[in-house]
Length: 345
Image (tube, rainbow, N blue to C red):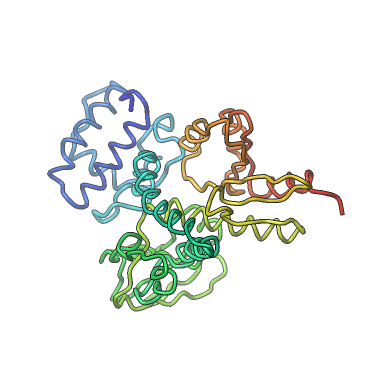
């Protein structure tokens, strides 16, 4: 990655913040390099020290990092010396090729196992639905899905970090069922998708009160439960929520839809008259980084890319990066576009 690319500096900041919460000695040289790049971007006064930069990481990026560098990212990268979900998402999106390859290595083994079975299509669909619907599980819950495919639980789930417990309780986001960090008085799922669905709370003793509809969210005992690995939460569970919501919206309009057809050749396939349209759902924080990803899609794979409605303002930017046969829509736009091409009743 080009050191002049803002993404390179953002990745250093995210890596440094992540290490500050686990190994400050390893974080120091990374923060030192980030300080030098920050000063080069705005060479006024003296360069910031790594200690000063570490303090900055505990404050929202929009308060100190120029918008030309931070792009779509906002919020602090550290809170109480623990990496925030914003930090974790930056690490995933800014190193997407490496992370995606790791995710795909695990998922591809499942695909290959399913493609060798006569009932593989249904097994794969059950596997994908299980990951999307189970951000947190008790190990015994996975048996019906994992055992027939000879899958290891440890490849997809991991122990829940202690900083996500509060007095021995977990508070799961009602939308994605992943643990929320309750160290602050105001609690929310760090996912923009979930926040758009009103996953916003205030901590009140042993329960959370929703800031929008005032409903109550009770804590759950940690016991021996595990959480979906962050990369799978990011690249499987989160887009899966959009995939399922989009499929339901299209079906409600009378369209024929398949989820993960041909053992995941695409996210959705919708019948439009005598033809079929492949659709990929993307839930990214940074539409700037998503634009790079869209630009890399081979022209031999014509498809629609669908993003959440709350990112509607990014559609013109993303469309500038579309290759031949690739189009970008929000969820609502996709439904309207599909109805234009659907066979008349």
